[in-house]
Length: 233
Image 1 (cartoon, rainbow, N blue to C red):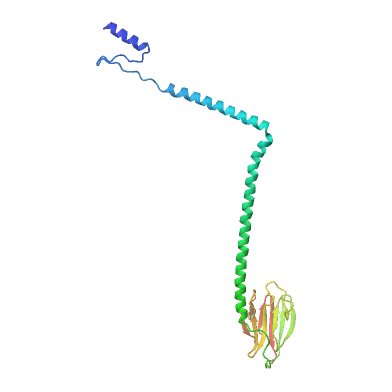
Image 2: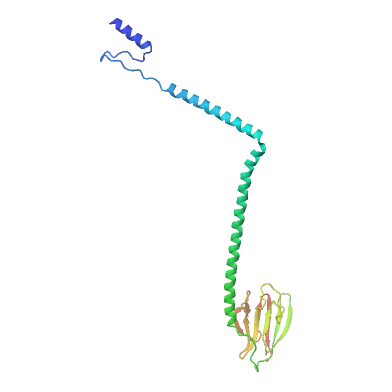
């Protein structure tokens, strides 16, 4: 019995990888090896290999940069300049595209306004005035912000124009005044004031009008100019 124990301890200490036998069942149990040594050694090897590869790659890059500085410079600057150029082109295409769209929309709106203006102008009588109208004499007194502008006698046989154009009977040089802003036309019922679809509008006694039969002391507002209608009875 003593010799068997000594033999078992020798077998265990000799590194055969077995535990002392189990006396209950008469079997030997294998020894479990640790896993730390199996993981650490390959990890260290992998880190060393990656480090060596990195150092080798960096040294190749440095060598290439030293040997080809111009090529490296243009290889870095080229894509940046190209990207900026493409951005500039896209930006201006987008910008000019929006500007063109705005211009087209403005043209469409302007054409619509012109069509509406033409329809309204077609409803306004024009041309020669009816002859032998028995209308009393009348005159206009125009005043602007500075003061007295001019005084005109209204003809009873033709139309009388007010606006910014040089051809108008009363010329008003103001940005809000249209070239042909309004006109006074002699008709059977009296002197009729027509607004010629102006951009600033025509006002009589504080009310905007399209057609109005003038009465004594009516105040016509066109831009910043006030014109008083005087009828001689």
